[in-house]
Length: 175
Image 1 (cartoon, rainbow, N blue to C red):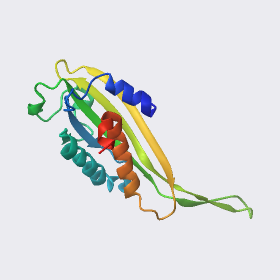
Image 2 (image 1 turned 180 degrees about the horizontal axis):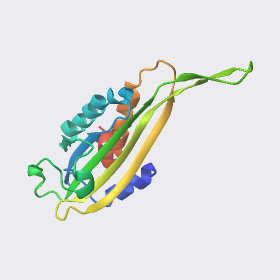
Image 3 (image 1 turned 90 degrees about the horizontal axis):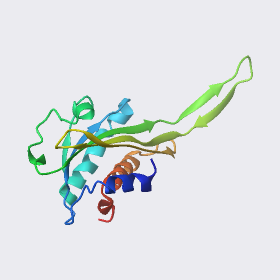
Image 4 (image 1 turned 180 degrees about the vertical axis):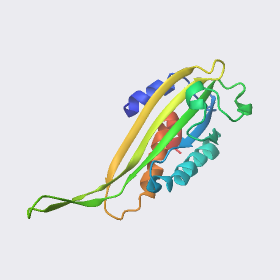
């Protein structure tokens, strides 16, 4: 889903009240597929913690197999969610694909080529009603950029996490 379409879809839910206070509790699950991606989950967590501190959004970390993703009801208590109409479940998949040299050919006709690495994210956002546990919205967001060999991917991972938060809370990016 495009950036503008995702923001419009989430804005229509009024996730923030007139005083810019969150009307939801956020649940974050980082879902790495490789060890290179697992190293970046703490980076993603720190960015979401900054969001928590700056915008007073309650962010709870959960596992990717939490029942919240299927039933709308988290395995951990959402005690402070009372009075808040939504639960926002964020399944964040960091993408880190290292660069490599590719060799191909047969019988004396070998060729080689450099394949640049890629860094980014694949995210699924689920918005559930706290009253009914019904799924109200499901959005997918993704972005990947090529990275030079041996580049530090952490700044790109941080920027990607901020970009995802910006889809939920555009005011966060203006801070």
